[in-house]
Image 1 (spheres, helix red, strand yellow):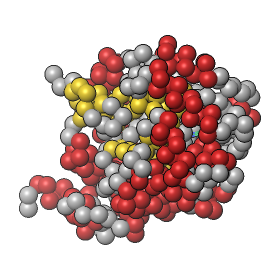
Image 2: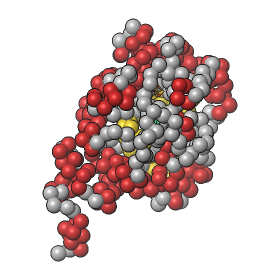
Image 3: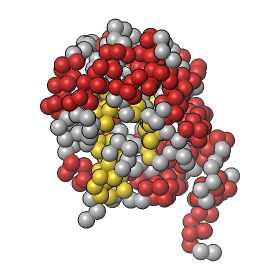
Image 4: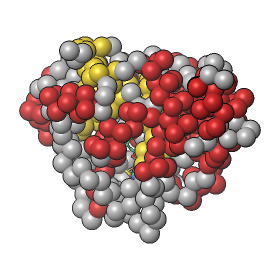
Length: 372
Ligand code: V47
Ligand code: SF4
């Protein structure tokens, strides 16, 4: 028997052989098969399968971009139990004025190709305020890509305006909105969603907003918040709804598993997931989401060394330089208290992990491949 077969024979647990075979042949696995694989496969096997898919889709390349974040406010109507950022839990609030936001674009976004704008759902700000903010940004930097407003922020501003979803999204697009970040997905299971963030947009609404956006040519990312109360079935259910939506629209650029961080929020009593769970979730996502081109590890949340390791378990995108412009994860206890990496550092960081750094734009067009 060839050596490879012997190795497989020894390390594929009973009942998984057909599933592994399907994956290696590029055939989609069902949710029940996913569940078996998730629970029974050794991490090394999951890693090998995920890495093989990563290489088939993206070779040895790992993407990053020059970006900054703008968080206009942390004042928020909602009370998600996992949030450390909301003014009530952070113990302080901020509201940037339009002048302050434009000032940041002028001063801090000189090298950035993308600005990621997201924040709390402020009770007194409306779609006209946000539309004029992004229009102001485009006036200063017509070339910058604006990735803005989670589905929860969009739901609030569009519903309040009395517009329907398609009209609201088109209105924002006409003012400069280019794409939508993945925030607000949390966990789609309705019972658990009620428990951890019951007062905000439902899972159906999240998916409806992303679907409508995709139909208007606004692409987006998808996320899943993991490491709170969810079980394996609920994780796979979440991924399955994303996979079904992507089959219909093809509009998701990347999937980003977001690890729950436990400082300064109402779930601080929970232990954070061990590294082995993080690896399992990233690798499994790479295998299950066969219609997503990119799996992103968001380094300000995971920390640099975890991010380097996850490139070997399905991750091909590590977001951007950030320039110390986000507070969501530093307030929740991430090791990266002032997240910022210069281009040289990014290049070394990706190379050290054994991959080829590729600078990209927001739509994953390659700008520079650092392959020598
Ligand atoms: O929806 C909030 C999560 C999300 C915590 O699209 C927490 O490129 C962990 O979606 N521990 C917002 N996670 C951020 C987000 C995002 C981030 C980076 C890139 C992109 C992208 C999107 O942050 C929220 C929620 O799921 N979150 N609090 C916490 N304590
Ligand atoms: Fe508000 Fe977002 Fe925090 Fe929920 S996660 S409380 S919607 S800022």
